[in-house]
Amino acid sequence: MARRVKPPRGRSTRSGTALPETSLVFNVVAKDERTPGVFRFVIQAPQIARKARPGQFVILRLNEHGERIPLTIAHHDEVRGTLTLFVQAVGKTSIEMSRLKSGQGILDIAGPLGRPTEIERFGTVVLVGGGFGIAALWPIARELTAAGNRTIALLGARSKNLLLLQEEIQAASSEVRVATNDGSAGTRGLVTDLLEQVIREESPVHRVIAIGPVVMMKAVCELTRASSIPTRVSLNPIMIDGTGMCGACRVMVDGKMRFACVDGPEFDGHLVDFPGLENRLRGYLPEERKSREQFTRVEECRLEEATPPRS
Image 1 (cartoon, helix red, strand yellow):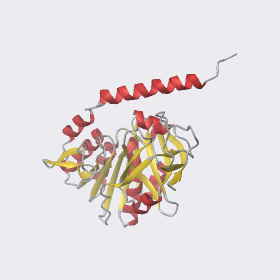
Image 2 (cartoon, rainbow, N blue to C red):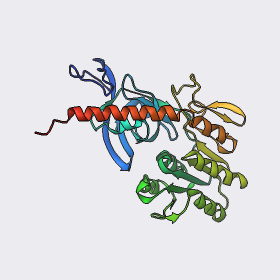
Image 3 (tube, one colour):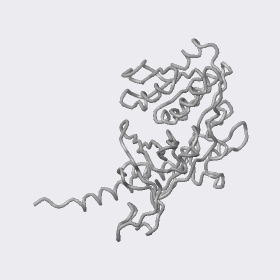
Image 4 (spheres, rainbow, N blue to C red):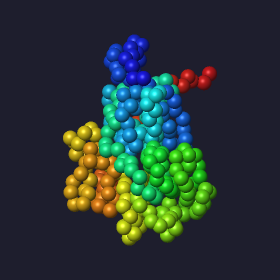
């Protein structure tokens, strides 16, 4: 559970700054690498676990000088008081988090945040997951199936070794279909190819939920718009405070400004301004690249200093 700890004298965070003597630290219970560069963390956070619902997320900060990053809650266990989060090591903070080990702690976690996924008995619901976005579909599939829906999960990845949570999604869904770019698992092609097939075969499809890269969600919405199928997408723009105060996560939906942290993260995909969203996501790429490179250089220097010279 989250606990008050008194770190040993002189112990420091990765930033080089010692933690306060009484810090609320969320313990990492378990950690493993599920696909190359994608790590699963089970974290003790009982208060958040009791209130979490499918579709919600948390914002965490590794240490006093760390940035705040949003992560979708892939699973919550109310009995054990744990959250399961997936992290893709692509930026400075996600790379730093990927190097944490079981037994270490995270300085703070805020959540659950955002509006939960609407769970009702719709009928036939198609869940489209691309790459890292598949993790966010897992709790949604489980709850929609339990509510009496026929759930068809469509999973897409570049190759078989990058497919995430296939067994878990199969256990949570009525049916699962897979597409990979290289044909190493399922059918060769894009996950939107599977969606076209399902729309032709299933009559009717009552709802589609898509989570993944923006380009994938945009393509899904173009397909479903033609068939007038209600479609929800989960957006993950740049986010800071998670309370709607900073405005960093603003998106245009139906011509109106919305904040993904408090109005979302799910929106009607047919109303989202995807070109505007794509532009905002590209806004800080140079700064993100510089931060990642600086962190990597510092870590490499530390490893060299810690490595004893050969005799």
